[in-house]
Length: 371
Image (cartoon, rainbow, N blue to C red; front, top):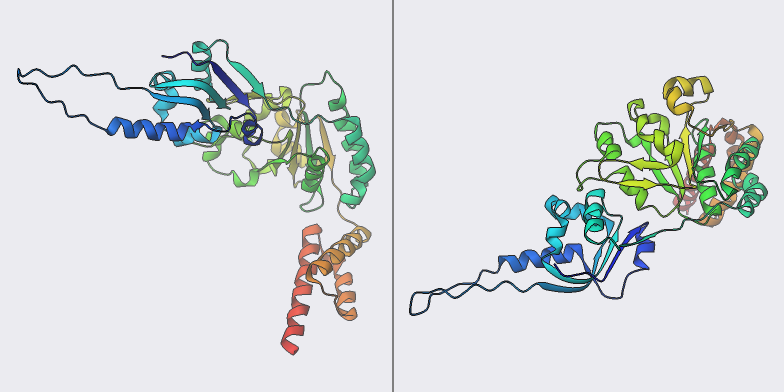
């Protein structure tokens, strides 16, 4: 096998990986396809006048200047390409190799063959005091009705501003649906100017969740691979309480040390913010349903209060102005008055938004019919 002059293993998102790549390159998918096509070309060997067959020549290796493997490609090739990757490489003449988030099996082969491999990883935004000051100044304007949350949030996030801190901060937000838990996580991500990493755990109710958490074949999606591919160090595990408690053990080391491993991948989330949400409204219910082992691993458990009538009116006023501008329409005074009176019957922000939008739609349609 030829000596590859430059081997880079990168851990991080596709967006950052693409910044490292040369202008022209060949992907794993393209190279596998090209190699398969070359292999299908059969040469007809005819004997000479003496009945002797010519000596078979070794096939010429495919030459590749820049070979790039993105993390999305592992699921698209046969498993034997991953398990016998060094043998696969030996079929080509390669100058430069760039690999994003390789599975452990592939990475081990690369390191054994190329001990001078260069490692690079994405540097995620670090929480600084200026971010906490911004949260302190603007939180109450963004998330209405949760003034008590802000001080607890600032207190829990402060350790990440200490330079020596490496382990993540793990928070549990609890309270009724639609009162600001998810929006608070999104707001923290916005302050850090990174897109949030979000997983909706209410979707994971079957046995396939075990494969997703603990790893299956390289063809299957996994939580560890999704974490490696993330663009942000702010993680939202929405409706965490909906996952079967039998899977909580998968998160013990992640919550304690920021380390997550499955059968194919291993990673370390340093200085990250991990936010779990729950729709339980009582701490005793949370502890009973989640269990003490996972409950004790949260650095802070923060309650989101029910919306008061005054807060519902503030939310309604804010949403009314936004929707009125979007629809370029003002409700008749009588309709608007009835709408304001109905805010208090809503449980959360989503219900208020739907109420306002439906009222606008009904009024506009009525106007159109009467024309």
